[in-house]
Length: 273
Image 1 (cartoon, rainbow, N blue to C red):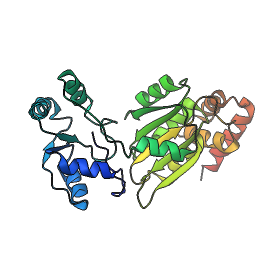
Image 2 (image 1 turned 90 degrees about the horizontal axis):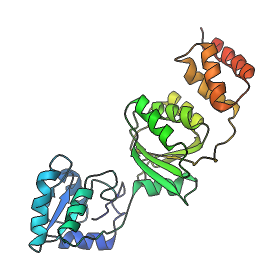
Image 3 (image 1 turned 45 degrees about the vertical axis):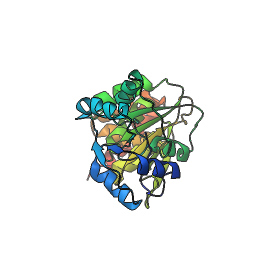
């Protein structure tokens, strides 16, 4: 398994380049993506397509070639193979068949985002992609709420505003970071509480580029600020009455019910022509 860059083509190791040149074949998700990287580095090793749709058919083919003495380098479109990408079944079957397996470490988007987030790194859980639907997302957040670790997710930029609103609702005012376009020209890391980030992207709209979301562990929550409460109220007022929105936000933040209701009334009036 050979890690490849997540954005900057220079982020590949000398050992990886040597291995890719010497391999009998490179097994890759998308031959067009891999061809571009190999072209940059002047590598002409033949490709074999290996992805989730043909994996069951291709595994015995690849294992047969390796048993015959060939060397196969497995890459993903970007980053470390097997991390939210196909490949673990191939590794498992290689082990079962007595085929030697090793990995060449390198770029990994979850680790890059974690390091840049400014959040605790001593214990973390990478949970892959968040579910597409709000109900499933909220259920996932509920399951992970008590995990004593920093949480790392992949997320579609188009779903990011809605996902942040759901996560703020379930996890509260935890510190978080949205990292996008990592190692690329327009790399950006936006940090704040979940309500603050939800409010920002609700107004700014979905960002461009690939996104990694990092959320601090339980116990790292800040006391909800006025901005946090306002952000939660604005979101709640889009789907609930003033009274219900206030009750909902007061319950989630532990703030005084009367004070939250008074603020909900002010925000409701502000939003009217």
